[in-house]
Length: 126
Length: 222
Image (cartoon, rainbow over all chains, first blue to last red; front, side, top):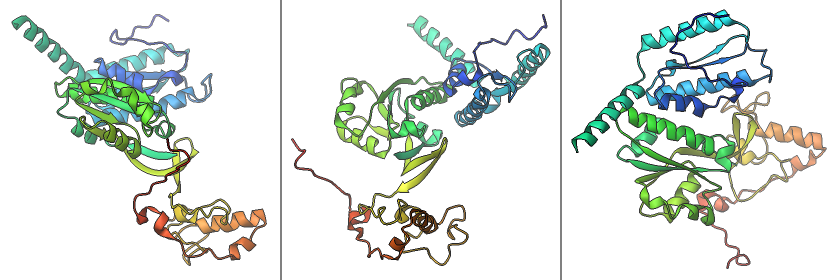
């Protein structure tokens, strides 16, 4: 449909959001993602029947875990978008982009960048 | 199986706060089935710990391993060659596994990641309930397969108390009255006469209150 959406989104394609496990969401944040969202089919329309429902439960669990860690569960969201709904896809992308900009960069990313600089400086100094 | 659940993350972080390199060891048996300490949970905990450290500007090196069981010598031996390089080990096994590992590897601190709760069953996915207290004197033959020691709040042996109302326990209204369940089942089996047979006073010496227990089978010892 050639709709424009923010270029801050990197898409990882899956056959079904039922494939998303908690560790995948954790890995994304560990590598410095500021925000993650899981976009599944509309509830009741999962080709595999319950994949998107399982994804939602896992997203809820991961949100709680991210709160415990201190990264913030609000950086992770689950959306349900019909496969053919291009405009909604673009809308969600804009919504998520705006929300994460408002929250600010991930503390993990900030620290990783700082640690890399400290590391580099230490090596150069030696 | 033994049912356990993960400790709050801050408690685990507190254990290893001064470490730089740790090993997280999972168990492929009971704690995998109750989604507390299996391979997947080891991966998630390792990731969570690394992030908790990165937030404070520190690096934590984590190695993940899942043993078949942590309650047998042979399986614990598998980490003997590699364990010395770590500052600490977090065991995601039940209390049994944590202790056995600590008995075997004396120079490394072993920390528990789980709170071990009970011997129970998976009633449905995500719901685990207590069934056995390990009293050492099984009376399930007389109570139609329902245990009053573990399922009756008062551990009564010969019928319900006066507080049993509409099949629910007076101590905890969400609990089914174990004796109601027993009577119903005996009725279905056509064995209600068994209900009239008295179960004698229990010998609690075989229970934990008699002291830590041990079984020795001389015919099996080497």
